[in-house]
Image 1 (cartoon, helix red, strand yellow):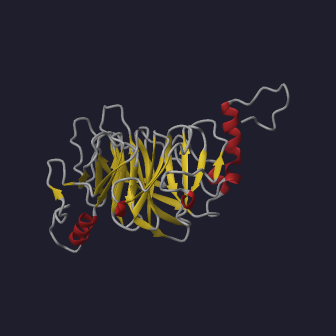
Image 2 (cartoon, helix red, strand yellow):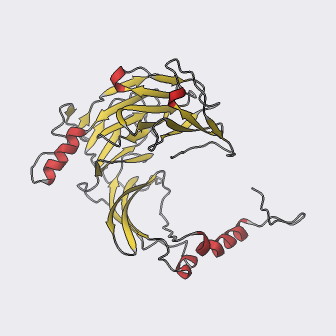
Image 3 (cartoon, one colour):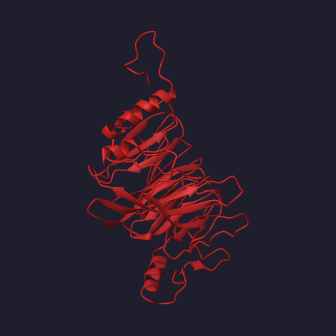
Length: 346
């Protein structure tokens, strides 16, 4: 975007000059700012629950991944982050932050040796200890971050053992992953063009019993689970077919554990109802003019669904305008991006 302060014929500021200007304005732009450098790139980062409130700052869980070059294994990192409340941090402190240092506000709580890259992280709303991850495999991995041992990422170390492995995909499922806000259900989409639904209710109940002093092993209460060398596995509650290409994102309806939606590289937005079977309830053909990368369902009004696409637009749909034949058009198209939209959130 062109700088409006730029005069005709004047050379545009360099990246370093723009950065210096931004840094000088930091105390005006932000209530609080912290920088925490990682040793390796991160493919996924996710806020977890807030677990402590204090007068001047809150403590909140932070999940992030580390994608290595193979010299050490990939990891899932659970960190505790101290978030300073607005108007508390001094302007001088904000403006003098060290962007090359590791922030004292972010501290590693635990490291899990993850089998493969961590492409997506989602936490279970009903139990903040339970986290699901996607990697480049057909399985969804479930972790109890409190009971998992803390590991050190060194060459040759064995992978951490997942508390549960959710099976059902026939090909890699790398990005489409969601947790239900009302029930302990997990939803996934993958390259096999399918959407898969699991219930981990029995597993969560078993963990709760273990917390009360019982000695059951993770997953032992699940009627549809079986032990595995890598961890207990749980079979799918339902497999839903309707996409013609890779499913890129999935999302539960905020008001119903049986309703959810998905988008994919076939340019389709599909609404599903598990009570009605494994076929689409509504399939919107050509919801965008290119691959769909992301979707979100409005938690305040469940009639509205937001999508993002490789056609550089964000579109809003009203499900009341969508028929069982898949007829429907967006109620609004948001334009302005110069490249693909990879994430939307209401």
